[in-house]
Image (cartoon, rainbow, N blue to C red; front, side, top):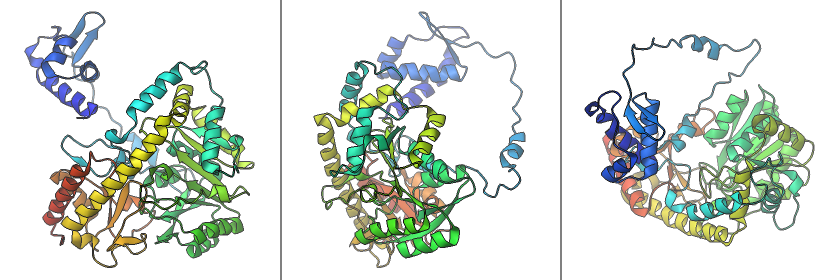
Length: 499
């Protein structure tokens, strides 16, 4: 059971039993609660902290926890209705509302209720995270001389050099001075979009694409303009048209194991993306989020777009988070030319710097033998889990994955109509035309499985309904198979053909 679930359950038990104690009466000791409920001391501490925050319990150092005295009078109900006006009013001439729709991001961050199978997550299941290696790296990092001092705003030099080698490849085309260490990939994307486009400007995006990037763009006052994809990635003929029609000077792309389609940008199109962007006088933001999530059966990976771009067209974004832990929020921004100064300035204003101990932990991890072992482990485990999910879909939902034409424009199809990517952590499933995505998500939740709707992945009207299914966030192959069985039950409830 996840620690967070245990905390919530214990807090509910303690809350329900408070009536047995008079106001001011002492509750059982933490040691007694640990023994009675068979949980860890940390769980007890967090559960009590939750009740303290609710005003039900007070703690006294050295004395213990006590039932709180009842409040003398109910507080006046808050009236926040004025905020509707304040949040909706746009300055004169502001053409792009700077509202924030984080629903697509929250769907991958939300912790499912106990018993719900998580097929919508955006991170590795705890069983796949290198917790022991991270703990050892953190312990070593904490003892490094100067680790707790103020790091350089650009990042620890040795970590910048490591990222430069990873991004630039064996040719050494990137210098450590071209790299900024960031607080994860999302922070790097935010800095890049704010640096490269003024509020109100259009930004070209793949369609479909990562909802977190769409949310960042809109929150920054930018106007996402979708460019369709097909089996080989973004359609470069339409990319050129979009640059001309919109006047945009920025294109955001995920060339490797794209989220959500899993597509890999084909070789000729890699060159064409750079050519088209240069002709438009535009930047390309390369979001290389999944390079360390390659599968065992993948062919040799192409180099980064930045490795083939000597002229500063590409601004590269990557992170260690997806391949390790949600809490190792360490990433990198790489760029050449004057734009690097602007990126640095925005990052300093936003966050000053990434905490030194976190950077040192990342450096300890990637420099240890455990790092290579971990990458081999997740390559094998992701392959096994991907194949288990694909097999379960063919067996239990053949009508959704086997019919011709189900995956047009979404990548090469290895099995019928379902694109099976050789990297990443998700499958992109097209639903029958007319399917109500919201109703299916709700039905799946009632059946005990969490899946992600396709709508948040489109900057404009989607061409068809979709689901994104993650095979990295589930506990194992058995849970994946059971998750598909529950999804089939949800489809049956809505009268969808399953096969």
